[in-house]
Amino acid sequence: MLRYVSELTGGRSLPVQPLGGMFAALRHRNYRLWFMGQMISLVGTWMQTAAQGFLVFQLTHSAAYLGYVGFATGLPSWLFMLFGGVFADRVPRRKLLIVTQSAMMVLAFVLAALTFTDVVRPWQIIIMAFGVGIANAFDAPARQSFVLEMVEREDLTNAIALNATMFNLGTLIGPAAAGLIYAAFGPGWCFALNGITFVAVIAALAKMHLKPFVPKPDKTAPFDDFMEGIRYVLSHKIIQTLLCIAAVMSLFGTVYMTLIPAWAVRVLAGDAATNGWLLSARGLGALCGGLMIASLGRYPLKGKLLTLGMFLLPIMLIAFSWARWLPLSLLTLIGIGWSFMAMFNTLNALIQTLVVDELRGRVVSIYTMCIFALMPLGALLAGWVAEAIGEPITVFLSALISLAFATLVFIRIPLLRKLPY
Image (cartoon, rainbow, N blue to C red; front, side, top):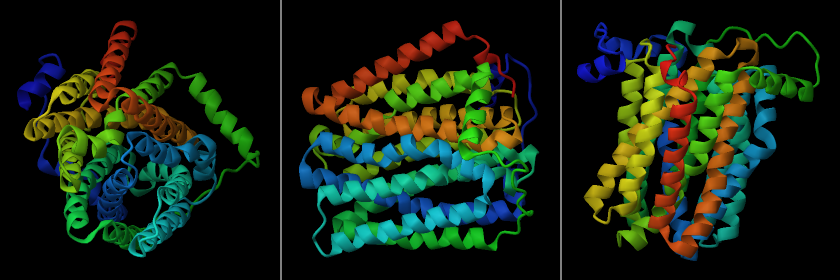
């Protein structure tokens, strides 16, 4: 690891950061509450994600339908997320998060009830996914920009990295647990347990001691606030580049996630447990990547880490597309998860470092829209293409497009890999 850090810094020696530095943000009480509550909730969220995907495939035997569900989840991001950023700058973010988390809890219990009573149908799952997408369109900008209310600015990058770490602990534990619970008791329990886990994050938010919220002093219309954020992004070349990377990689670099349930059955001849192990392997790699980013949070390496992630992700996707042996598939997914986290966590940290505080919610909403809106569009396209030419070729082609884009950015924008923030 020390040798790797030395290579990234051009041979300059850096002081070894103590283990406490990796978890610096946890010294803040509010962030500790957030970390524990969100950690429990994310395990449930990933249990539902894994179980829902496999249930849809069991009901339809269609990769295209997996894309429809993914698209339904993301469509509200196109419709509402930018205005979700406006709300995140206008209203107390804690209250907004409590409302959105409560809405997602109710939807999880509704889906559980439909499943337990054996009346669940694919169209109902699509409606539930659309509802979760609406809640998430307002939740994501508030959640991302809420970090600076819980920690001091010097711990912002570390807190963002730890957010990614807790997310990926959820991706490691949740799908594996879902696979076992699904096989033993059925998908209904995965959805019900997810609903229960939202209590943890709602309680954590309620217990926080935050500074009084100061609303925007001007009385501009929401649309004017929205356009102010757009104008700021258009005037900031580096942020534009970072958003383009997030958009292209979300569209083409994540299509494999949609196809995992079909991959487990058609490519690897597995079952619900196989589906869970595949998703958890990706989570393990992402967890390792998140911990690494957290440990390097105060070092000027973000441009180099971003470049490394942009190239490694498509390379590992190509390897995954050719793997037909479960252990090898798991190994490549660990690499995919690591590179995904190195790239997207660094993108998040760079954007939050560069943006001015008064526009944070709106700019972060544009970033999150690039992810939450374009990932489902990629899922929809992947489902259609996979139905026509198969899952492996679909992943291979998406990886080639991602690799070509990374090469273009590397050649045309050399400043990016030199960013010291």
